[in-house]
Length: 465
Image (tube, rainbow, N blue to C red; front, side, top):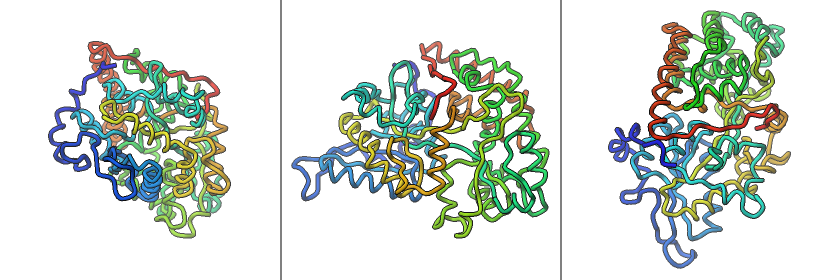
């Protein structure tokens, strides 16, 4: 499937090869190291693994999983290279384009992964998943593998299920006699009631651009439905974006800005600062993902007594919208194997272990996150918030990925830049959509010249993530 070249990434390849110290000199991906005392005779295979799990407790959990794996497989060594998420996005593209990728690397599901698949940069593992009566495939919760499957082949394993919710301060809601809103109109009324000189209704840290787009992504789904989005976002699809719901969703988000529901200068506020506004009660709500659960737990960055003073609700229903109003929004973060690895069997062996109940339960125990392995979350290793979250995911009629993971990368950047400009008021919803149409038309022409394939994803009404 060598349909898409990596020329767009190659311009920075030489610089990145020097700057990225994770890959040892002379070892493009993995090499051989001498085993320590007690290991099997002969050199051990060394695999490079790139991840965004650079912060605790994920970093320590992965280190423990790797240590357990190496103890059971003395002939394989895993060299983990953690990188902060936003920096990782550009680094992995560049190093993949340079021809010296890591053997195993982290991916976001959907079109973000599909870019690597088109470039023939990822090893398909369909046969391994289906071996032994699909024993490996059956480990994965729900239909999360759907977003890792293109043209009948599956690439990689989803590991974490992340979803976005409105986290809210129960004490501030009780003080102002506000109930968690179920509809958009109720949500607007709640924002008006909660607004005070010293309290913003919602904390927004949009310095990294993608948090604002989460609002737009959810509004689009509520207004138009998942099928419409998947069709329009397909880089080889029509890309007309002629449904009025696109402009309407952007305008609804802009209306929030003009209504004054956010903290001052959202585009100059980091996510960390926005999170602090929430747990210091300077903001009544924080629209964020389940990746922030650990920051709010005892032992995290929030005050010790904060854990019992907050709750969450799903993105409100939009009256008259065509989408499933009970849908959750999220992604399935996971790992893939480079098609250029010199050690595919060893990489698959590790990926299978990472996707085992043993490794998954360890990760849940240490990180209190939803791992997409059947049997990973139990009453013994999860707290009440994680158990509730797992039940919500299981009961969800559908889980819709965020727009920036479904859109082709450069089109997604146009949307992210547009949403940031929309916060500033320097662009109109119509201009954003014009820019997206123009960019997607260029992408489509390029892919057609290269014989690219489209993203084929089933979207049944009752799908569960």
